[in-house]
Every structure is written in structure tokens, then in C-alpha cells.
Length: 212
Image (cartoon, rainbow, N blue to C red; front, side):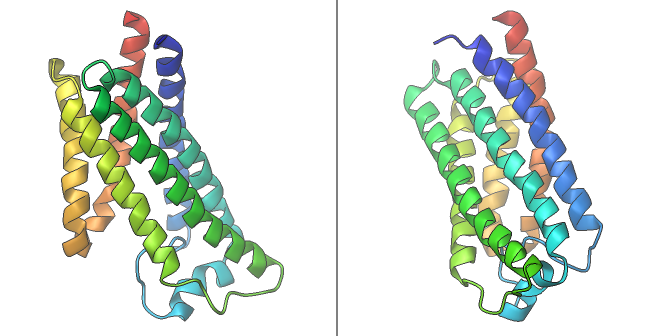
């Protein structure tokens, strides 16, 4: 397999993913009183629907950035797979497969919110959201991501501080993510891992481009 084009694409995608995360954060912080993506139980259906009904245009801005994030991290997973496949083929394919599943569930979750926001813009506010189905899809998204980084982190190279940092970050993301099921306060930390991880991935892929 020719790895250089994969690393080139993954390096660009990692930076685009980082910009997407920042854009999503900017959209959310522009109106902190609303939860634009209530992927976890937030109370009654009226509270779930409040963001898309009251600020549908802002919600669509967030989900446009999130859609770009999904496409980008899917390419990043291809780069991670290219790194690990020669060290542990089974783990590499588990990681890529779980990453693809995470993207699929993420896109499905986004489709709900995008549809709700478009309906609100058309004058049809959300009254009966598809709960708890949206929550279940969101949970499957995160579980798939945890599985992907768990498999890839276990097989990741350990030579040099950058590789050790990336491997540790992937495994820590999995641990914190799973603990977040029992300790909801940890859920907010999930996004921090992407803010740290994407620049590290981009740096790693850039190094591989130079060495390949």
C-alpha cells in the first residue's frame, strides 16, 4: 500500500477537523443558554427541542461544521489505520471499522438535528422529537469512537515521545469516555481530546510524509 498519499490526506484532514471543532465551539458559545446538540438526555422533550426551534440558523451553522468534522475524521482514521496495519493488522482493521461506524452514527445523529432545524426554519417547530432514538444513536457513535481509539491505541508505535503521547491520548480518551457513562461530569472532556489530538495527528502525519 502506498502510504504517502494517505498520510498527506490525513494531515490535511486533521487540520480541517481541528478548525471544524473550533467552529462548532464558536457556534455554541455564541448562545450558551442553548444546547445546540443535545445528544445526552437534557430533560423533557420541550427542552430538547428548544435550540432548533429558537435558533435554527445557528444550529445549522454548528451542524455544517460538524458535518465537515465527520468527513475529516473519517480520513484521519485512514491515516491511523495506515500507521498501525503493519504492526497489528486485526487491530488496525477493527480501529478503522469502528471509526467508520462512528462516522455513520454521527451522520445519522446530525441528520435528525438538521431536519429539525430546517423544519423550524420552514415554520414547522419541533413538537415530538424522536426520543430516545436520538440518544441511542449518539451513544453508539461514542462507543464506536471508543472502540476505534482503543484498538488503534493498543497497537500504536511506542518509539519517541510523540508516538507515546498519541498512544496514551487515544487510550486515555477511551478510559475517560467509558467512565463518563457512570460519571456524566466527564462527558464534557471528550471534546478536549479532539482539540489536543488533531494537531498531534497532523504533526505525526507530516513527519511520516517527510520520511516516506
